[in-house]
Length: 227
Ligand SMILES: [Zn+2]
Image (cartoon, rainbow, N blue to C red; front, side, top):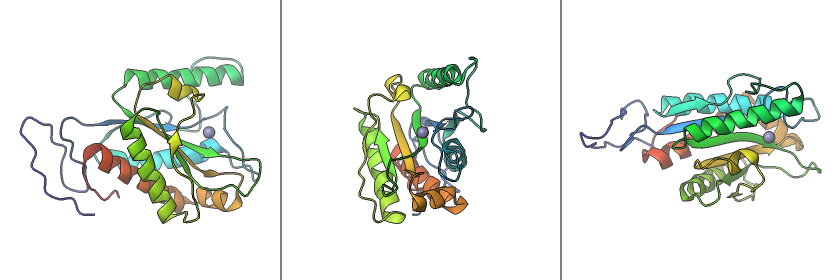
């Protein structure tokens, strides 16, 4: 889509309308990108040893690049393979510290939109496809999740019949923050087709691009090609 010319009132902060950048009508929107898990908590593990936290990070990094380039202020909750724990001597204690630090950053930036990246698993290998969740009670979150789900299904997973749903109430991060949020479970590590796609660098970039395009359009009102 081509970015159409936009007249921005002088009082507003103008964040470039060229080069595919979003145009923010009031202020630059902040986005928190949450790559789920991180060592020593790798999250789910596929049969070939692929760990969820690595795939989450790969997609989160693409998202950062794309949303940053589109003009958003982006905060990555983790930038490398490690989680962001600051204390604890056991894996459990480190996980608790990590999730509390994530909550703290989101709470400090409660005007930021949170996009969280995870991978799914199921007890049988037939279950497949991305599933997008949204912060319950947040209409913008639902709006964005519905659109991300539609685009992923349409572009990459035509036999994916999943529809977006509210984030379950027992997910610690999301029941401790008020930020508008979406949680993208990008696919199932227990399904071979999903796994090979999720490990594929081109697919990682494609799914990130779709997520970034929806967020850019919905949060800035700009139709922009995300590079
Ligand atoms: Zn996970």
